[in-house]
Length: 205
Image (cartoon, rainbow, N blue to C red):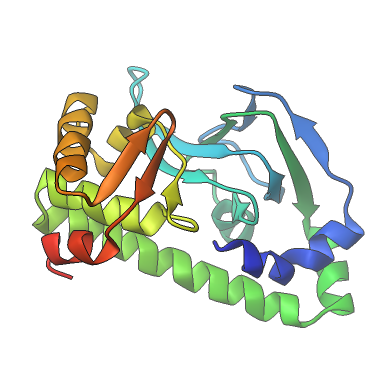
């Protein structure tokens, strides 16, 4: 979500007290029941799946201005994923009671939530399409474009590998190729997009 869209959730910041979650601390676990969802005010949060043998699959890495944990909150089913703070983060916990109070104060919040959920469904559909029809390097190119904020993707190669469903070695090799073509500049913990048109053409966009 773009920083300018954070105003959609202003009412959450005005009516709730945030709290700090230290780096690498869990926010919620897969299979847990959900009595609340969360708003990320600052920091970075990873949403991931865990298998019975302990393997992890990163679904997304969230930047400030996003809500998360909302699916299980709304449908009443156990959580399908886990959430962990990748850095020291400030979050707001939203309960059913506090959400209804916020909507009474600002009815537009209900529409903002519906829009957000629709965007999430669209994003998941795009990810399925990408995993089904695109090659590994094309998947990474699309991922970079979708994660870019102000021309920069703030994620490690491990993060990108998990999100794209490819190995870290493949990420490293592909980023090097993109750099040679002048499409990106990779640095520690971030990737700068230098030629968005080139990346779009590469994935057939």
